[in-house]
Length: 75
Image 1 (cartoon, one colour):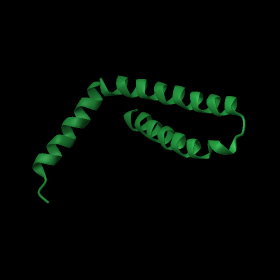
Image 2: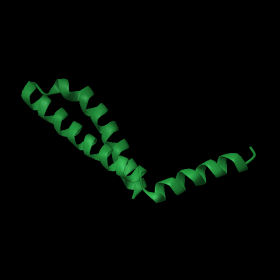
Image 3: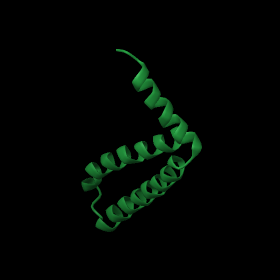
Image 4: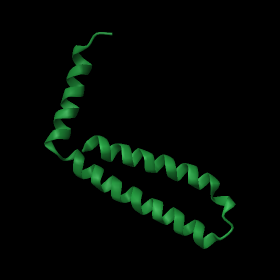
């Protein structure tokens, strides 16, 4: 599940940057604020799920595996 949650978080962060740059096209400031608030809420929820995933044994094993590769592979 880590891959899905991390991907979703990255996608939402990129989406927010793109939308924020285009919000000037929306003349209604209340709608602009509502859009940003909605995205921020979804990003926060995703970051909370990321924190849960990072506390799992699966994630710890993944990080350990990456560290092992980093010390054993010669480039």
